[in-house]
Length: 288
Figure 1 (cartoon, rainbow, N blue to C red):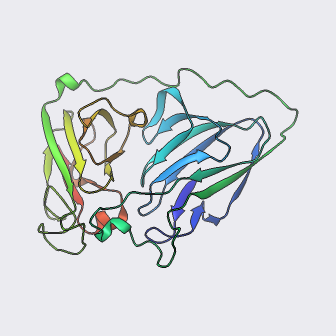
Figure 2: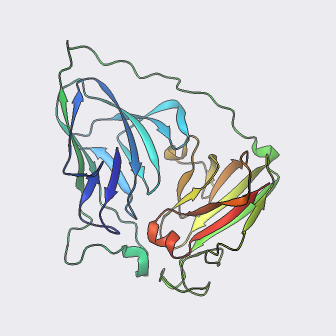
């Protein structure tokens, strides 16, 4: 299912292009595949009846083990797979809490929310579910304990550390055309004629990524990575799994192995808030 908001941070939630959608689901364990396709809004998703669910997958595939949750955060560009038990037959809604992610200095932080709408950030219904009998009633299938195993890169073999800071300058004003007050990475706005980082094919590196003034969903093309640490401590529960998009404000360490070449056509890294990346918060890296 694709979740999207109209406009920058609009007042209408669309799911698979539908307004106020209702999903008829079988009264058993159901697998949901979610992607946040919104320009800017971060969804804090839970169920209206506080039922728990199991998180089983990220952008990079299955987790090693299912994680029982009552809420999950989904930033622009992030994906998640969930297992939800509807065997009780009761209708329920997937809802999102208020999105409080904004720059303290204004500017782009408000993301163009609808004028004159006092409750623009109020909790909202995303999708209503209506369980329906499917054949004979039966108990829900058990959630597998072990989902997938994979070989992770060895942090001890990292050959280089890089640091990326997503800058908002002057409160995140757009259209600066330079590094003096707009949306940049390491003080430099995007330039398609410039390669910002050069990486050796097959190497493993640690990238430390942080953001100014607000939380930024950072997306790196051509790789999946593991979160090593967050703000100098252990990763959060939602940092698990192979990822390609991570939500940052405080410094987050990413362990990345570069197995895909990109010499003549470089890969990109950027904030996944559309207005941020379009106005300079993006860079390029080659892998050869």
